[in-house]
Length: 98
Image 1 (cartoon, rainbow, N blue to C red):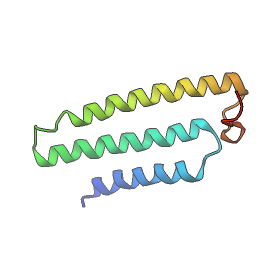
Image 2: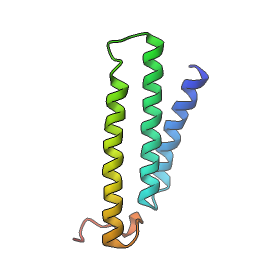
Image 3: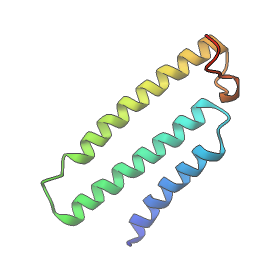
Image 4: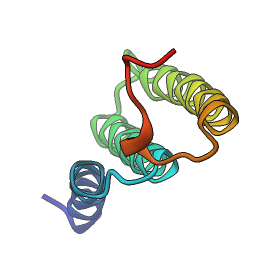
């Protein structure tokens, strides 16, 4: 494993642990998800460059497009939550409330 692969793999796992342990605000959870998606994009891009394969060269762009859609949906949920509940704390959210 090259140092670059190790760096971006550890970036993914740091985002995963941040998502698991720091679940106080919705914005921090969204930032951890974005860090994970960016590290996946960079790892997939480096893997395609190392293989010199053009068969799956579109895969990182598709992942980036899905990441942008996920980010916009997350921000829309953040705005809706802040408007209805007054804050973005995950503890104040409940599925039983309308």
